[in-house]
Amino acid sequence: MKTLGIVLGSFVMVALLLSGCGNSEPDYTTKQFETALKKGENVEGKTVAVTVKKMIPNSAFGYNIQAGEHLNFVSSDNPEVKKGDKVTLKAKEVKSVLGSFLISYKKE
Image 1: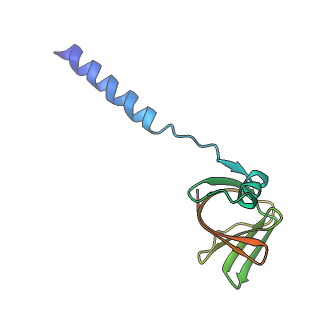
Image 2: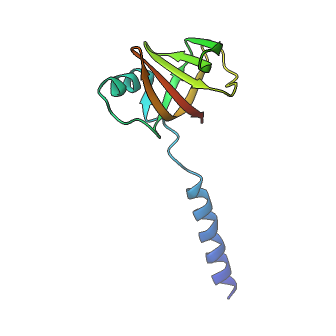
Image 3: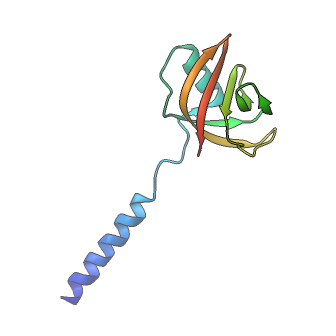
C-alpha cells in the first residue's frame, strides 16, 4: 500500500512538472510577424518577440510600441517599456490603417 502511495505521488509530481513546461518560444520574430501580416495571414493569438524601436506614451491610440517597419502595438495600459527593450507580445486584434498595422496585445 505504501509503494502504491509513492508511485501515485511520483506520478502527480511528474504531471505537475510537465504541465508547467509550455512552449516559451514566440511564434514569430518581428520581421516574420510583419511579413505574415503583409501576406494577409491571421496572426491573432500568436506571440511575437519585439524589440522596442520607439515608445510613444500619448499616441492617438494610447501607449504605442513601435517595432518593425509598420508595426504599432497599442494599448490603453502602460506596458512600462523603453527603447531597446525586448518583450514578447501576444496579438489580440490587428487593424490596418494607412499602411501601418495597429495591433492590440497582451504582454507575455
